[in-house]
Image (cartoon, rainbow, N blue to C red; front, side, top):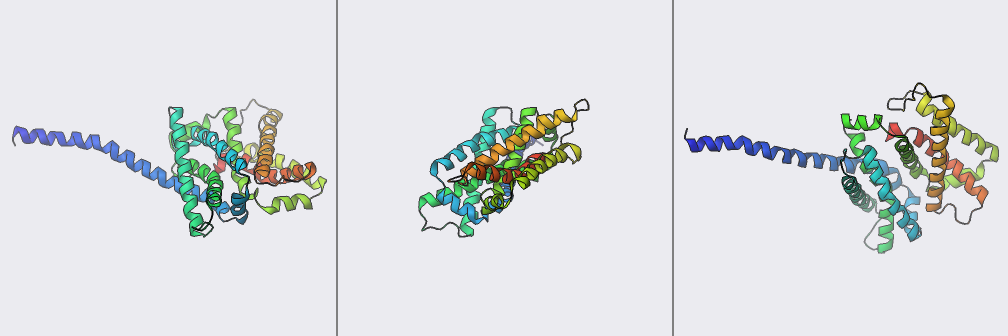
Amino acid sequence: MTAETGRKDAALPGRAASDRPVYEDNRSFLVGLARAFAGALIFSLPMLMTMEMWWIGFTMTPWRLVLLLVLMIPLLIGLSVVSGFKANARLRDDVADAFVAIAVAVVMSAVILVIFKVLSADMPAREVIGKIALQSFPAAIGAMLARDQLGEKSSESLQRQSSMTYPQELFLMAVGALFLGLNVAPTEEMVLLSYMMDPWRELALLLLSLVLMHAFVYAVEFPGGSKPPGDVGFWSLFLRFTVVGYVIVLAICLYLLWTFGRTDGTGLAEILSATVVLGFPCAIGAAAARLIL
């Protein structure tokens, strides 16, 4: 073997070693992108097949839709920090992940709506944009959460979940409330149920929501559920997490009802009633956030 050949052979492992990380990074990115598309589809499929969402996307006041999309950006950035594609060292990486999730959500929503013939070439641009934009909100949440939900839990992911701060716990509860609330908030049933129920039933539903919220997280030991510190009493946990969490749930419900036009031309009593009714599934979503997100 000549010296030149030896030098060439010695160079081959070096090239393979330098090329391998690039290949692995590309493969990891493509796998993550595929999971993001799957997560976007799974999270948004009920809404993609809901007639009310099609109509609301067309009839919704433009500035309400714009506000929803603007709020989506900090929501996705927060999700990236708590449970995103990966643990990022810099905030700008979380921002980039948020916009990747939005891009995935827009593409997936457009493709599915075209296949269902909810979108067609003869529709005005405003209707097409409105329908896709509205569907991209839940789809982007699914895309952002897909890494932990559809992939194997990594040690860094488990560490992030076990070391969550109090504000991060409340933020995750808010996302859980959105996750279930978005599935039912646009439907007529929320308004219909609020008309059918009398005040005593609404009060009973409110109390049941609080009881189930507390039971889901602290009384029933679900895998992944929050484990309260041994020196913290029942009432402290109930007030700091369950009651505060339920207040956040009601605020989200009120915002969703307003966004979807369910509060327009409606009296205060009817709005409060619909908020309590929607608060039931949202409370379950908030309590089970660690399990479903």
